[in-house]
Length: 398
Image 1 (cartoon, one colour):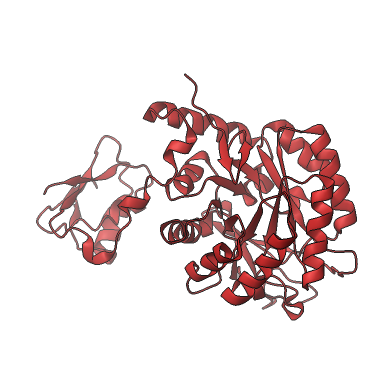
Image 2: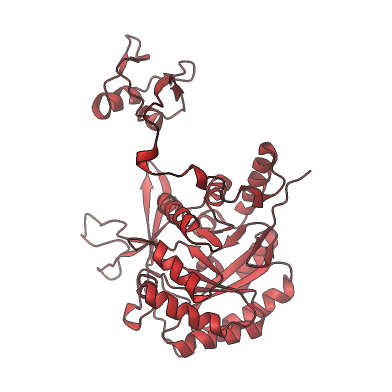
């Protein structure tokens, strides 16, 4: 039997757990329609505001980390919310719901005061939106108006503002998008819970400086010779996002939509294993296009079938009981490096890394074949991380 990929999230049925995050990919109704036709379960329309809220964008907006020729390991943006105000987004919601009644149409909002937040809710519900996401998390731009992560870094402001939105919402569930730019995300998520809001989205981009042009000395991206800190996304932030999703799942009883560095079905499974019920993607579809949904759906279905699960909902949170603290980790568990010489390409990387960053447990024979000294090997697992062909594994010896 084919596994059931549908997910119930805040009382709404998603045909699969994959959602387009609020981003340039969702800033136009026609683009979103193409994505939904391709197979995405839903989309969060890019964050909108009331007509009186000025949105002044600058260009260029993006820069990237490239590692060993691989592009977009991490991407930074200095984009703001959409220039398309609520009057245009209302039309998108109506058109999309008419064309895709079985897909989930969400909209992201941001306001500078209570009346704006609530007006946005009223108008979106009237347009037929399925769910409302609130951005308490934009890491740059408009802090002077008390918007973005200015709210999401403060539990009191988070609870107050989320309550405003929830009070205004008569039908659509309310989800709050959280910032990772905090010391502890648990009090923020608890504040959302206390407000009465229905769910959290974790996490938005990480504030960072992607790089500096060593010829012009200007930060990247550079706007007329100047730069600012931006929001880092893409695979580089996946460990941070997994950390925050799992922290929320272990400490606050609230549904979670996971986002941050998800590029493959494997990434999506990891987020669900630590508590996310749905997952949102941004950088990956910007890089590879909407058709990646085919691999995301097929990969997840095959994984569930191979593991004997009948539904995607069965895997949510399965990794959480295995998360513990350092003092509770076993001191008797012992492993040693094991090299598959048939796979080994004799690149010397395991030898070099062990010699200069490990325990000098790997030597080279005359023909450059690596040899593990099990007396010296403590099982640190550095060598399998640097092996380019997967020839090294850790075998348990105690």
